[in-house]
Image (cartoon, rainbow, N blue to C red; front, side):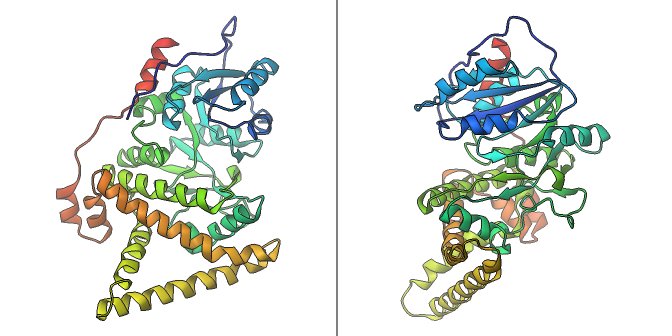
Amino acid sequence: MNAPTDSHEMDLAPEPQRVDCSVLVPVLNEERSIVASVGAMLRQRFPGRLEFLLVDGGSTDATRELLGALGGSDDRIRLLENPGGITPGSLNVALAHARGRWVARMDAHTEYPDEYLARGVERLEQGGTRWVSGPQVAAGHDHVSRAVALALSTPLGYGGSRKWGSAGDSAPAEYELDSGVFGGVWERDTLLEYGGWDEHWLRNQDSEMAGRFLAAGDRLICLPAMAANYTPRSSLRSLWRQYVQYGEYRAKTAAAHPGTMRRSLLLPPGLVLTALAAAIPGGRLSRLARAGLGVYATALVAAAIRVAGDADPPQDAGLVPVVLGIMHVAWGLGTLRGAVRHDPPLAAVAGTLGFTGLAARLAPPPREVYAPSLHRGATAQ
């Protein structure tokens, strides 16, 4: 992978101002949503001074022009560049230039509650954790994205991940997460201590970092009061591509950090292998595989029936089995691809299946975090 080129700040404030919390925002070709997204971020109610570091990853649409207008309208906005274009590189550029004691990651396609930052910092100050985040709540706006949101509200959609949720009255005040995380709030020195985001992870970079936190004994805390609305993909093709990438980089994360593997993550590649077995003509294995696929298809229909009452309009529920099937098969194929392209997650699989001794023998050695954009940005500050 080519390393990102040197980054530089697009605007320079005449005099540095004291900052309490820095918000890191990677952007790329966001002309349709960037103005509304940043406007929502600027509504954060925080007892201190904020800065918003918007890092353009080489946009080819009107995003850069819109960022320039935004930067001229509010002195809390700082505009940075990351010509390398990858998300972890943009996050590292922002982290290197951040001036606040606290930092938070925000994404352009997510709507955050107005007290997201304040609640996150307040919980960090209480101690007992160095990573605080909120649940990811899928909120669609068209037929496909609404169906994806419905699918993610089912056990077949969210699997064993606890990051998917809501801020309802029945939710606990807080709970712990595994490596399934959605952004977060940290102390800046903590992220620097951990080496920032690893730029070998084009996707799943938060989970890779979470693997490092968990291996060091840190607790990851989720506050339902920090629930943020995430907009799912609006086409089945883009959903397929997204989940293939998710599966690939989840496999890569599990290979580097075996403790991040959950049993539910083995089900999608198992489904793909079952489908391949079902395609073999004749034989007992083929018959068993086909029976298994029949049970799976029934479960998909049952999931759609389960969420039908929440569908608005009702026909959105009819697409849920298709969406779930795409998620599972794409993730499964991505996982298998990741095992081939990257190191196979042998220790993770062994540990998940209960072979702890074998998992210990197969465990990978410690590895360095690859974060060239963080170090370049720090020297250019």
